[in-house]
Image (cartoon, rainbow, N blue to C red; front, top):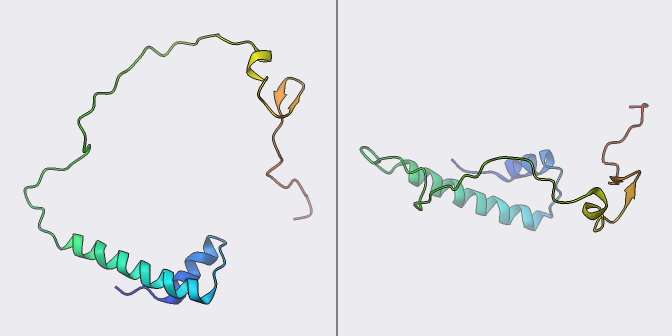
Length: 100
C-alpha cells in the first residue's frame, strides 16, 4: 500500500494542520516507509507464539483507596496563578456565542 501526498494532505486537514509542500513530500515518504514496515510485520509467522501483554515483569502495588484530608483550601490554592471565589480560574475554551 503506497501512501500518497493527497492522503497526507487529507489527514493534515482533518487535524487542522498546515504544511509546506517540502514537508508534505517528506511526511509522505516517511509514512510510506512506516506502512511498509507494518506490512512486513504482518508477514511474520506468529503461529504458536504466546501473546505478550507486558514486556517487563512487574507487580502492581495496590493501596486502600481512602480519602485523606491533608490540606485545607487555602494551602491547596497557594500556588494557583488566579482564583475566583475560592475556585481555580481557568481560561475560557468554549465559545458561548449563540450566533452560530
